[in-house]
Amino acid sequence: MAYVPLEDLMKRTDSVYKLVILASRRATELNGGAPKLVESDSKRTSTIALEEVAQGKVGYKLSKKK
Image (cartoon, rainbow, N blue to C red; front, side, top):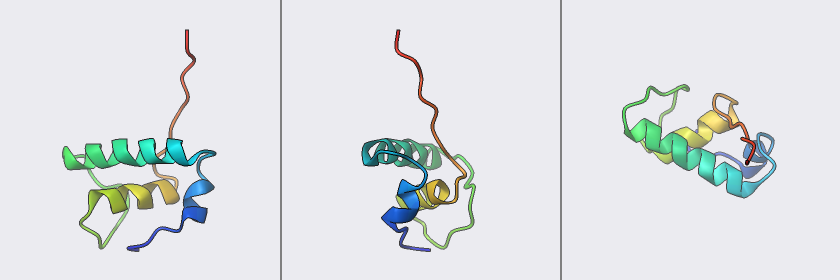
């Protein structure tokens, strides 16, 4: 899957900004050597990160501000 539809990604989050931050952080982890959570034909970490988000393999948790 080289193209991840935005509609699939937006089912996992309520904000495109949160999506960008989530995918960016996951891509950074993948660049650092973290194992892939999905099978992918792509070698680009950004695409792999988006595929993981679309499949529900990674997510985020909001922290409370003090």
